[in-house]
Image (cartoon, rainbow, N blue to C red; front, top):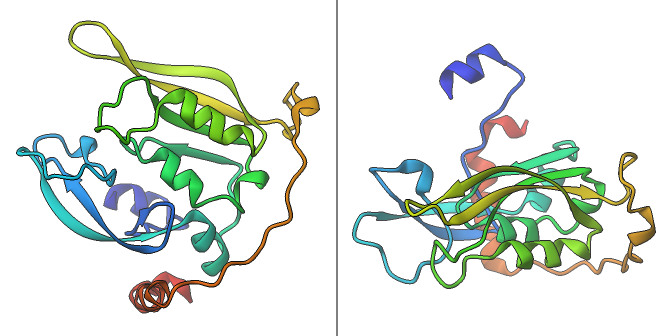
Amino acid sequence: MQTTLARHPGFRLHKVALGAECKKAEMFLYPQNLVGSTALPLGTTPPDSRKVEVDMLTIDYVVQEFQIPVPQVIKMDTQGCELSILQGAAQTLPQVDVLLLECWLTRAYGPTTPLLLEVADWLRRFDFHIWDLGNAWRDASGILVAQDCLFLNARSKVSQLSAEIAPQPTPVAQPRPRSQEILLERMKSLLPWRD
């Protein structure tokens, strides 16, 4: 990351987890396979992992509070956490054109791993539809376990699904619990790029 950040001085690295709500969260790190680490609640610590506590924010909070432009494209490969991260982006999603998500066809990270059809069904309320498929991952026996999926917003200029746009409900602001306020104040004090 240091090399990438040095080459692109306009990039910022935000050392937080993303999820459905702003809170302290547990993450399972796999020292032998760091790319397999997940914040998906597994219930018990697998023997080949270690549990760490991380600060978690929502995409909606980050976009609003830190005045980050709404992205046109969001790419996620978060080991089963894609749906919970999307749930924390309900206000941002209608303005996003494309989502590139790793989607699971097995519950590889335990019983709460969201499957491809569950993710697609949830995204439909935001007018996202599967538009194309990317890389596929198979287990040692050749069974398809995960698939990169490109979801396109029906409002996008290139979409041919504009007739599928659902009416948008009026958002209702919800007060934050005091525990979230304390965490968010702590995060603000730790993030020098907020200026």
